[in-house]
Length: 108
Image 1 (cartoon, rainbow, N blue to C red):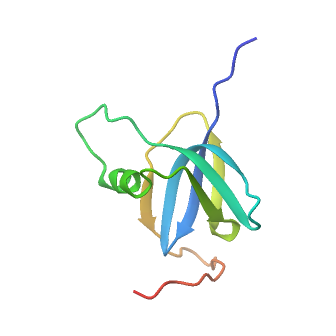
Image 2 (cartoon, helix red, strand yellow):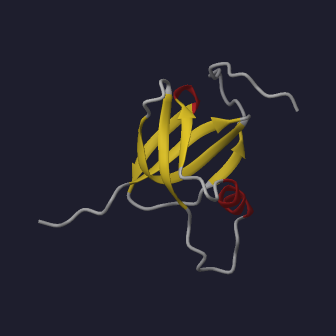
């Protein structure tokens, strides 16, 4: 019987007109109604000279964050993955004929 490693989850969610793709070790439904709790964010190791500015921005933004409460209607997808990829932020652009659920956007 082999011991299975702790799972890593890829969480994709919308935040202020951007799509966040992040990796975490703990995800569960919050006691705060309508939210998911995301804990133990995982970022890539700095083993190469090449630095991804998007991942560095996420590291800085979530530095010191113990737990994030993400509204359920902002979640796009959650996957349990075998290995971690690169965390990133991208612009939310509608593609095809699918319209996303309307969400309030902050004034710029």
